[in-house]
Image 1: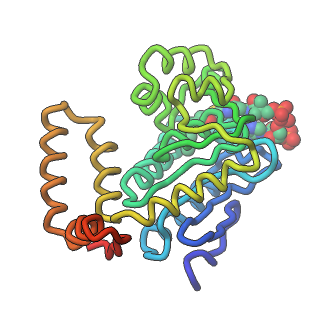
Image 2: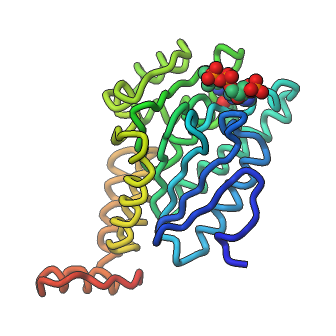
Length: 265
Ligand code: CO8
């Protein structure tokens, strides 16, 4: 069975060229995340990681209203601390899978991205939002806090002032405001958001794969390091790429005024 054909309970998988679209498919609950959704996502990302035909992932939600309206509140309502620890731990493990995947992962946010949904988008490399997208961390209204990286990734993405307001007020912001504060990269008409994310994956797949993976790694890992150490890692990674065929090919192609034929080695 090909990786795209694995069976999932709440996930639709579609390949468009090298871009693999993962659509969370629980529209009756506005695509809320439960353990089964998380399990599907983990298996799908594992499959994509080992599949050379997949150049990158686009993550979106089924239905007209929602990307992901958060973790499943009905499923969480009866949890005790131990279960909550396991659930949040799996969410964090999934976020780490996305940031350590050597391929782009783009969130195409087509509606509500609340709580764990906003956190899921933040765990992707960048976020394209439809004009109707809404973002928020409303967990305090439920007596809890973000548990899937929201406090930490928001802090790093939009700074302490905005992260504090979003996590403490629990209000929603629209796509224009999300763009203004740097939470999302682009705002597009609703019908264009997935296509734009697919086009970005396809564009990136034309560049040197080792370089793309290294650029992603440097940015995700460097954010947690002191600047001199992060800069030193960049120097080493930059120099390391000069041992690759892709560097020779990329520069020779530029000088020869032709398109590079990268092999990923
Ligand atoms: N969980 C479970 N069901 C949900 C959720 C959710 N998060 N959101 C919506 N639904 C369900 C509703 O219960 C409803 O079901 P039903 O038709 O059976 O009554 C259906 O989806 C449609 O929802 P609404 O009727 O409420 O639709 P509206 O358009 O009126 O409102 C809203 C849309 C504003 C999005 C509203 O549904 C809402 O406020 N939802 C909850 C948003 C929220 O609080 N999210 C945060 C949850 S906490 C969290 O995410 C913490 C993450 C921590 C760790 C995660 C680790 C993986």
